[in-house]
Image (tube, rainbow, N blue to C red):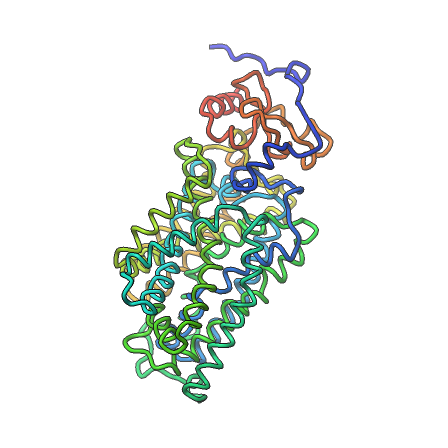
Length: 535
């Protein structure tokens, strides 16, 4: 069978361009938030807007309780050392992630195409979406428990329904059109509640330094120093890097340094991890709480002590964090179904799906198995973070063409052997440690997976072939315009106009222009693109 010669540039149809945003695209973006597209510079927000949207994570009750929980295993001093080291690590890693996300405008799902190929990126979106859904359930369950404690006559199932019905709709709009505003309005109230809970506790029970010098009668038998145990516990929550990435993509490139150092950097994690943990430790060792310490019992203690004001603080704090969680879960669920099953539906539809799933899961004894599931998924996410950081560090430093992180579906292979090998092997080793290694294996699983993933990927980069990362195809719209970030190009399928940076040529339709979303869910385009690359 003979192969047709490639078309000359003069034979392909001209691009239909403009220099202003498409009104229809802007209308969709108000709710969709460019979830299936690159975020154009015109949709980026300033420092204050991004920080207010992102700071919702700061108020998760998880951070208040997890520090005190770890303290019961290894003592206060070791816990504080581990958290301090975690705050620095989080700051460094997420500073790099935030700057790169702002530079490229990519989401976690899109960037994953550069690392793992089209199939791997779909799995990354599913993993991220499922993990965040678990956190929606856990944080929502805290509010339901608080409502039920304050109004015991209301069944817990009704309390859970109330939580879902009021929280999910708050995530219908995007990061820069709503989440920044609601979280900004509620931030002072959250901080007031945080300080107020400490003051109330001192007034009620007095102050003692016993919480600061606490040592458990029997330290955790993990075979590692207590501070390292605490550090690895926080490694299991490196999904925060994925969350930071999907928020940071809305930041202006001019603000990338500030956002990297402050908004997504160490100062944020000092407050989020360290300060919240200190408050949690003090409350846990001062308030009289019946039963073993966990998120729910701590909340019940706050409600019992503060009454309505405690309930209000819980509502404010959990509303802030769960609006972002609902948003991220719906966005990544949407990405998965588009990438894997070619089902394109609005993000609001998937928000409804997440709400239903969350409510059903809240009716089960979900905490008995979610924590175990998160320990496995945490290992896979740590491996993703290690590979992402290795890719950014090595490709940027060497000036490699791979530093551009090609994400367009017609210009990346279905599977990237470098990324998939590193991710699969490191994740498998980590999962095996969690499953069969006992307490010691669970502690070592995240760091072992992290180091292994980075090492394998670094070696794979050195021996990789260009075709592992990028399909060699002609006729790139990026090179046909003066500024691919400012020029809009009309897609021949949806007839909407997006920036040239995300556009491609469709060899299955006479090489007309096609946008990122349409290219992702058009099998004929993908087949033709692979055939063109192999010709």
